[in-house]
Image (cartoon, rainbow, N blue to C red; front, side, top):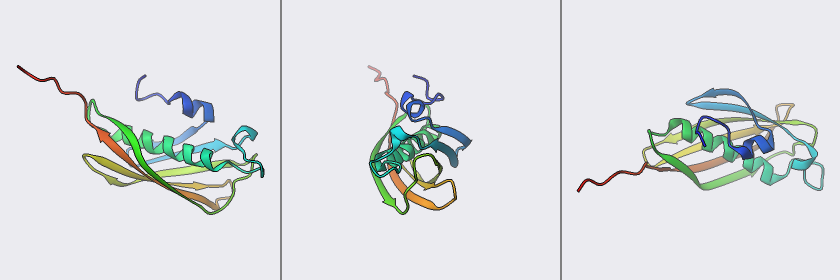
Length: 134
């Protein structure tokens, strides 16, 4: 899979990137019934998946040639529910972009602009394979 195309999981969720730069990604996610919990709100796991996809994509965009990444830590604070039928919006920005790790923060808001969650995640920078010379 090419790193400049969205992963199949992002397409399954229906994440729409609305702004892309190396230091900020903005996206929207329609909160349909399949992403809801039993209370009629966006499931916490869907909120976390939304943010994880953005943090991973932001890291990939900032990686050195040949490197890849994996999420090694993620923390979510929930502040307000996002009802099914609304649109979740996210802004993902870097807190740290280092050689071995990157840390991204995603602010998730409801359609009315109210803060719903903040997700902070750490991405491991995995260098590309090096060929050993004999």
